[in-house]
Length: 310
Image (tube, rainbow, N blue to C red):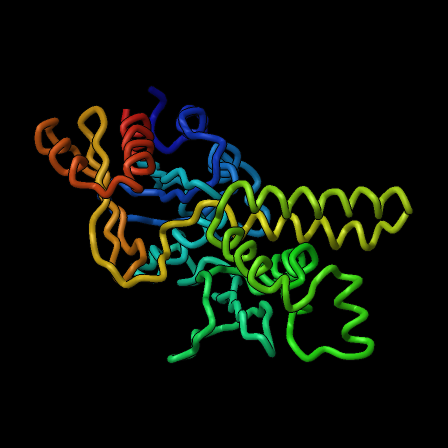
């Protein structure tokens, strides 16, 4: 094994990382967390610290102090963004500049099926007593607005309101929406925002078809808008469990090859991540208590932690 902290060591460690999105942190020789970041590809991002730092030159003095690398492989880039934010807000390492880790704004999608004003909108807060349904929270106001634009383009629930007349009624007819369609459209929107794979894939496919048609007509600006909506739809419909609507408290544990990884969920958010050496009997007892929907996530990251600890 190359000496810890050097370029060769970084390359070996990077080879053990998955190409998936995730968060990573650098530890010094005393066990202190120096820095925490996120990546679209862990394998590609982490080695960059031992090369040209570009606009991260303030981290140059940190790199020689790195003695250990730890990482969490997330199920999506959105999940990685949330995990980074939650962990930084819980404890800000000395080399991180911002407790948010990025510029994304926290927002919600509000769905109303009111006969007079059905539709989708992006909001910053949930209103107490509001009868509408809320989905989220999400990070990235512009991304979420693009997702709502694409979703409304394919499922035009806002055109399915009562008491339309004149031009508004004609537009609704062109869009293929009427008050009689409101229940159907609402169910479809709920299915997409609830991350139902089939419904999300159907909306994505329709947007892709319209994008390709726009390209064939040389309407490249409109095609680019549709592509942004597709990418935004992926952002809000891919797996994201580290920030939840409920305010539950529980722990998620995974064990592999003598390493126990623990994620503390407080008020519905993963707020702390730790790992330590642990004998098999105790480790398996804790991992067996993990909720079923977290089992694959915990097991995957315990295996990753064990690989990086070699």
